[in-house]
Amino acid sequence: MTRRQKAIAFFVALCVLLVAAAVTLNITWIVINARRVTPLILGIILFAVIIAGLIIYTVFLVLEIKRNEEHESFINSITHELKTPIASIRLYLETLQSRHMSDDQRREFYGVMLADAERLHRTVDQVLKAGMAAQKPRILARASVDMAMLARECVDLALLRHHLQAGAIDLETHDDGPLVVRGDAEELRTVVTNLLDNAVKYSPDTVRVSVSVAAPAPHTVWLRVQDRGVGIPRKQLKRIFNRFYRVQARGPKSVKGTGLGLYIVRSIARAHGGRVFAHSEGEGRGSTFTLELPRLAS
Amino acid sequence: MSRILIVEDEQHIADGLCFNLEAEGHHASVAADGETALQWILEERRVFDGVILDVMLPGKDGFAVASELRRRGQYVPILILTARGRAEDVLRGFESGADDYLPKPFELAILIARLNGLLRRRRWNEQETPVAEISAIRPADTFAFAGRTLDFAAMEVHAAGKSYQLTLMECELLRYLVKNAGQPVSRRAILEDVWGLDESTDTRAIDNFIVRLRRYIEDRPASPRFLQTIRGVGYKFVAEP
Image (cartoon, rainbow over all chains, first blue to last red):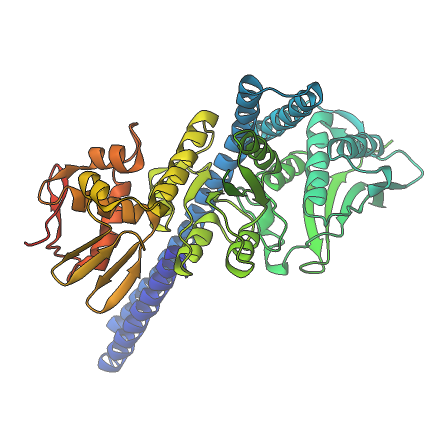
């Protein structure tokens, strides 16, 4: 049991005791004032208010403790995500500066440093985007965006970025007409890229991700990203979109991140009048993310 | 040549460290998570002269790995190398049994110097030095007082019928305090002379070591008789209070 879990257990127990005490007092009050109507009713109402207040207070406290915990884990992961690539770049620069090595080795080190710079850039980008996502109202550059084409671009980019074979992410389009939505292409690209990055990140060593773009109803466009990775416990399917929330690491594979990706996805989806939801058969059985946007009438 | 174990899940950093340690003439092995490191050291009995340990690892974190090693009687020098540099993290690192702590990003030269310091200390501990020389520069390898025996060679404390195994730095700190018995030593002096640090390292890290040493040699660690705190200065070891 962590310190926080102990704190939560303590406050819940305290609440139960206080409620029990209030109920006992209430019953006593009813017995004593059985024949006097005004104090009886007044007393019952006041006790009910006290009990409700206690429960609300405790629920609020427990939620705050949990939020605080998420915030702290965010600070830890963001520290890690920012400092690790910096540490790596610095280590390689110092190595290049102080040691003799072959040209091949040198080129390899430059490659490592570029990859770290890219990782750092992505993290900084996410933090900035999450900051923007929290702002309201959002200003979007609205234009017609063909989701099938946008998905194609993002899939190609993801294959390149994660060094994957062409077949690792397949893309299907299920409609004859153009699947066009009205929105900000840059932001929508962020959504699809974040979903693809997650699908790859939480996949086993052999990545198999399917992306499909379809119109389940005349006025809706769906973009689905399905992976065969670690999956998500049912209880956490909604919470994963919260800011800073991350499913506790399980299994041998290290998966690190900021806890901001899906929060950004959700806020962009909402700003476009759409939504995003997750589905999973359970742990180890993959997960499916669906982005639903209003279709632009052609 | 020393055998160094790098416990690090960030491939790039692990490779970079490996390259540099090999260039320094050491032999480096990389474990990508804590379980593997424990498996190698505790089950397969692989011998390392030093461990560079990351904290944020998949599965068991670095703190848990360090405590587990110490709990199972493994006293290989551990240097924690992590992005978590807050005071409470540093304290937790020392509490879990690490001998040194360096936050990322780090300076390569400093890392190597500190690692070499730990390796050197280990070699000195293993070396047999003539008795005359020992008494000239430090107390003999055993020291007895008030029914307790400190065995610096075996890194053990025998007190009240019990034996405690000391970590490398616990042993060195105790040796230093005994050497200066009767006179107060400042936290800064301890940091400089025992750890070889002269920067603005958090001197409170020492307090955790003192707390542990008191558990070994004091009857009531809360009101210490032998290992006294000198307010505003540091600590004093007294053999016959």
